[in-house]
Length: 81
Image (cartoon, rainbow, N blue to C red; front, side, top):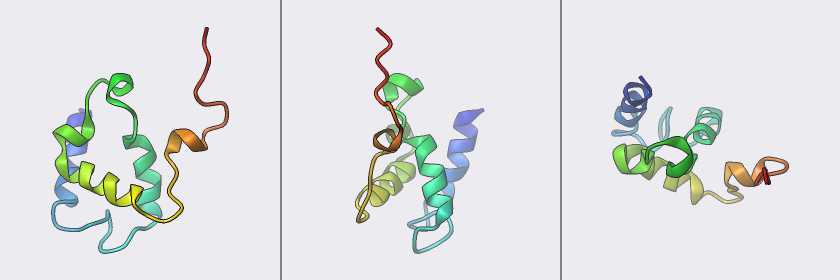
C-alpha cells in the first residue's frame, strides 16, 4: 500500500521540482519529514526505489537553512539502552 502511495508522489514529481510546482511550499515541508526515514528503520530505501522522490529530497536538502527532520526532534537519537 505504501509503495502505491509513493508511486503517486514519485509520478507527480516527474514533471515538476516540487509537489505543487516550481517552488517549495508547506506541502513539501510537511511531506518530506515522512520520507526521510533511514532505510534500516523504514524497511526500504525510498530514494533508491522512487528516484523522483530522491531527487526532490536532495532539492529540499540543498535549501538554505535546511535541517534534517531528526535534528529537529527533541531528544533524538533516543537512547533506549
